[in-house]
Amino acid sequence: MKKLLVLLLFSLLVFHLPAVRKALIIGNSDYGSQERNLNNPVNDATLLESTLKKYSFSVSKTINVNKRGFRDAVENFAEGLQSDDEVIFYFSGHGAQVNGRNYLLPSGCDIRREDDCDIEAVSANWILGLLSDAKTVIFILDACRNNPYIKKTKGDAVKGLAPMRTQSDKNQMIIYATEDGTEARDGEGKNSPFVQALVSNIEKSDKKLQDMLLDIKIEVIEATHKEQIPTAYGIMSDFYFKPRKVQTPRMEIENAVKRNPDTFSSGGGSNAPNPNYPKAVGWVNDFSGVLSEAKITEMTNWITKLKEKTDVEIAVVTVKELHGIDCRVFANELYKTWGVGNEQDEGVMLLITTTERELKFEVGYGLESVLTDQVTQNIYYKMKTTLMDSKDYNKAIEDAVVAMIIRICSSRNINPSAVIYK
Image (tube, rainbow, N blue to C red; front, side, top):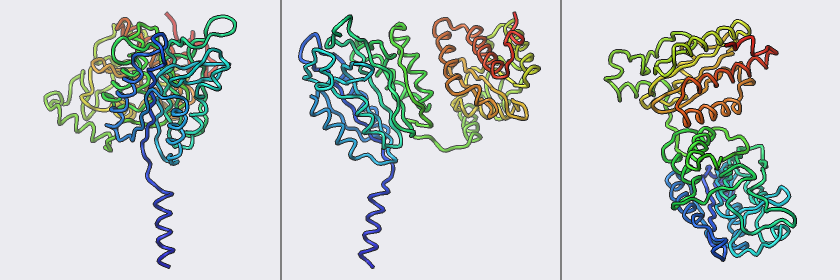
């Protein structure tokens, strides 16, 4: 009986190990000649390694590795994965696409023709397949750098990487340093623009990865003067690099009040949130004072007409800052406090903090099939781009409201021109 209990306990320990955060980082700078060598992949791998270790990742790093070493590193890493693990794979170096398939180039490879990739390079899909048993896989390729290796038999060299699909119904996201079919910069300093933005946001942001990627995209676009645009494939649910603090929305509000007693001592002003929340003054609530009166009136008329036609409600809110309150928490609590949305919870709130430059869409349950995450992310990106280029809040917010109205009207077979009129 004792032996049976010992075996049972052993099996529980072996087969029910707690989830672990693991990362495999490969950086190849040495490709054998001045023309082919890259300056920053090893630096990028080292920087990301030190960053991930701060957030409880067990990191395996390999640099300037040949094909055999590359494959061994991937296979050894994959063998130790458990079904509950959270995994990051990052490669920095040369990459290539051949007939829609992506290859990562090891050091010492001898590639003269496209067909050589099958023999000399490592398939990106092969790597992703080996990692797919993990609960969460974040697959990052900073590998679209100018490729001096491959020349097509006819025509010019194929640039960048081809689009990739996730290989599991679990949490998987494939992140490219730039759009498919384009080249990423190696960087003029010690690191690539992409890894600089990635590490910067991991360090400073408490956002989940899906939201953080939008900020990374904006930073890379700005750093490269719009020549490089990171892109991603797949959907990642709530993954955070930093551990989430477990506290209720009310606790967050109360803590903000304690940190800012002067701001909140009289119940808060129109420019700052307070425990009782600001009172709505209409559909458009410009507590930051960044919108013109004409624009407030125009958007209010549109939203009122939308309400008449569809019963859907849109609320726009600008505040200067949230004093440490999570933007998502504040938007969610304010949405509920104001009672935005009809009986079917068909409503949406757009919250903008003008000092902290945060944007948040709080979408009611009844509108989630219309204003999906992808839709609101696209609107978010366009708003960020407008604010980055011109800091024109009138245009950025108007464009967002128009985009939401068009989407809502289209879902009800209503001509948007019946709502939006100049």
